[in-house]
Length: 605
Ligand SMILES: [Zn+2]
Image 1 (cartoon, rainbow, N blue to C red):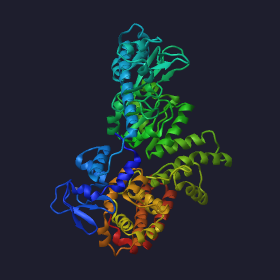
Image 2: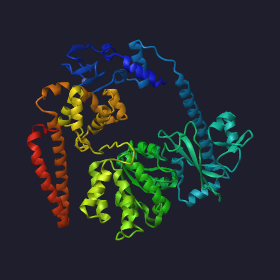
Image 3: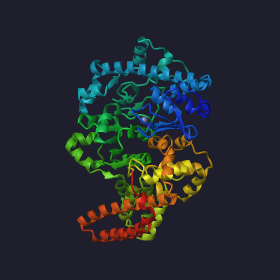
Image 4: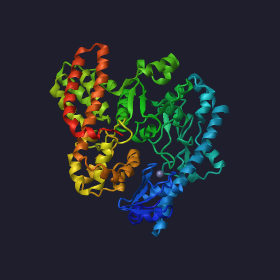
C-alpha cells in the first residue's frame, strides 16, 4: 500500500499527537508537555513525555522517541503505511483513493512473475549443465577452470543450450504466456515482427540473486569464440542494474563476521575465492560500481578491500570505485596482485595463504592513488608535480572523517614532496571544506568520538530548540570546525541550513534535511525534549558550550599527537618528533586560554 506524499504531509499537520497517544496511555498535562508512565518500559515514575508543540514524544527512561507515526509503529508493531492508516482513522482524516497504489502493486506483481520465470529457467539450465549431452561443453569448461561440482551447485550455475527457442518452449510448457516470457528478459523480441528468441544460447549461466537468494537476473559466458564474452539480462521489473552485488546472498554473514569485504569484479573472481574458503567477498559485476551497491555493502561492513584486475582497465575501475566508496564514508584499501593477475588466476597459482598475506598488506587507498599519480611522472618537474597533486587531492577531499582526511593529506604531501608550509596550508584549505565540487557537503565522521552527545552538545542544542530568540545568535557563533567531529554534527548542519533558509525547525524538517540519518533519528527526540536540562543549566552560556567544543577538539588532537609522537620516537624520526612536539606546545597554549571558560562543562557523556 502506498499513500500520496501530499496526503502524508497533510496528515502530519492535522494529526494531534496527544489525542492519538491518549488512546494508549493516560497522559497528564505538565507544563507545556504531557507526561505518563512509559508504555515501552516498566517504570513507576513517569518519564514518558509528549510535546504537542514539537509534535514528538520521548521517554527519558528508555530513550524511545519520534513522531506520532513512530509511536504507532512501535506500539502496534506495524509498518509505516499501516501506521498512517491508523493515525488517519484516529484523527478522523479520510483516507485518499490510492491512485499510486495500483501502479505500485502492478509493478510488484510483475516483479514476482519475472522471478517465477527466472526460477523455472534456472532449474532447467541447471539440469542442462548437470546431465544434457550438449552440456558437456560447459562441464568441460568448468573442469578446466578447476570449479568443483560442489561450487557449481552452490552458485547454481547452469547451461543454456545453443538453441533459439529451447528455453521459450520449456517456459510455455510450464504455463507462461508469450507476454510474460517477453517481460522476463529471458528472450529478445524480434525486430519489427512478432515473436522472440532465447537470449542466452550456448552459454554458461551465472544467476544473479537478490539478497534473499531469489534469481533476479543472469549473466551468460560464451563457450565458443564469440565477440561478446559475457551477455547479461536487461532491466526488468525484478532487476535494476547497479542495485545488486553478485554473491552477496551467500557471503553476507561472512562479511559481517570479518568486518570487511573484498570487492572483486567478475563472477569467477568471486566464485574461485569462495571455493578456496575466502568467503567475505562481493562482486560488482563488470559495470562501474554504483552508490546503490555501496549502500548495500555498507549494511554489512564499513571496510572494503578492492581487489580488481591489475591491468590498466582494472586500475581505472579501482580508482572510480574508490570515489564511490569514499562518498559513502567507507574505509578503502586496494589490493593489487602481482603481474596484473586477477583473484581467480592468483589463487590457483599461489594459493589461499599467499592471498591472505597479500590482502593483509593491501594499501590504504591514498597510497594506491599516489603510486598511480607518480608512476610516469618526475616530481622534480614542476608541471608533473602539479599534475600529480591534481590527481591525488580529490581522493583526499572525498574522505569524510576529518581526522582521516588530515592523515591522508599529510601522507599525500609527504609523498609528493611538498614541504613548503604555505603551500601545504593553501592546499589543505582547498580541500578541507567538503567533498566534490557542488556536491552537498555532508560529511559524517565515521567514528564519532562518543556515541552519546556530550553535556555541552546537549545543553547547546536544548537552548537552540527551546529558545527561538537565542537560536539565531547561537547558531551564528558556530564554525563548522566546532561541530563537525561531534555525534550531533548532522543536526547542527541541518539546523544551520534551515536557519539560513529561514525554514521552520521541526522534528520532521530536521529528519528530512538529514535524509533520515539513523543517528539523528535516534538522538533528536531526546535533544528536542531537553528543556528541563536547559532550565537546570541556565548558568552556562551558549558561549561556554562553544568553548567546550573547541576544547574537546584540541584535546582530541593532543591525544592524537601523543600517539604519533610515540610512533615517531620508536622509529627514531627526530625531525617528525620535533614537529609534533611544536604542535603540542601550541595546542597546550590554546587549551590553557580556553580552559577557564569551559572547564565546568567538560564532563562528557
Ligand atoms: Zn520508556
